[in-house]
Amino acid sequence: MTDRADPDSSPESILASAVAIVARGRTPEQDLARLLALARGAVAGDLGSVFLWDTERQALALASAVGLSEGTEAAYEAAVAADPDHPIARTAHGQTAILGAESVEPDGRAMTIATWPLRIAHEGVEEPIGALAIGRSGGWTVGEADATLLAAFADLIAVTVDRTRLAAASGERAEWAERVSHTDALTGLANARTLSRVLELEVARASRQGTDLSIVLFDIDGLATANEAAGPAAGDDILREVAAVLAETVRLVDTVARWGGDEFLLVAPGAAGAIVARRVLDAVAARPAIEGHAASVSAGVARFPADGASPEELVAAAEAALASAKGLGPSALAEAGAP
Image (cartoon, rainbow, N blue to C red; front, side, top):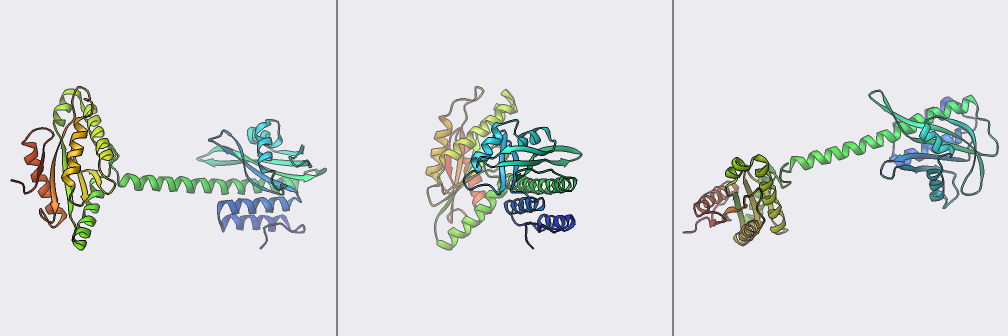
């Protein structure tokens, strides 16, 4: 099946070809170009174009064109965008078809053009998205049959554009949902579920390769007191501040997550967990006070395989070490198995 209409084709067969393009779509760009080529051929036009609103630029942008002289696309787009009286701009703005306007294109050709508004509708509300334009060299009296075909093609092009936008929006929502499923909403760090999986993988790799692995459990000192004195918003600010320090301070090979209400867990390949932990403690202590409360954290360190051979055993060892650190005062660090 060709995308250019046979001059002897009936309107029905032309529209059947157009519907087939929409129903059996390739890529959005290909579908738009094929529909435009078919529309131009259906009314024996020399030039066809689709202009869509670019919301970022707040201007009309050339989305597809057929029959333009090579190298004139940018000039054509600029001419339409800059001239509110251009038939394409008038149709896109006013959402009214213009059948038979005179125009001189950037390549110098005098054209009679017919334009049709592009609209989509959601929940009964129509949204203008641009305009379809077909030009014919010389004179052209746009009859009822041509106008009917242009209206049908405008609807099919609008559907194609809308479907592309919906697919893009759906992809963005899926990406957002995927990101949210792995992220703690308050701090932006990984969440406990994500880190649990990372810990399983790192323990398995350390066991297979015979290498060291450290985990560090951090707890914010006095967060409950800060919440009572300055309110939950201050406590949230402290949590975010500590999370930011962790993200800035840990190594690229490390993974850190919010583990509980005021706890963070770090998975650090190798034997340098205590060194990284001390760096975090010092960095947090150096930050300015929040709502009059200086932030500090304590840390408990556990190592694979000395302190545990499984994720559960390592976390339990880190919890015991953290309890020891909390007994020593703010910004303290304790290691599992240390005397």
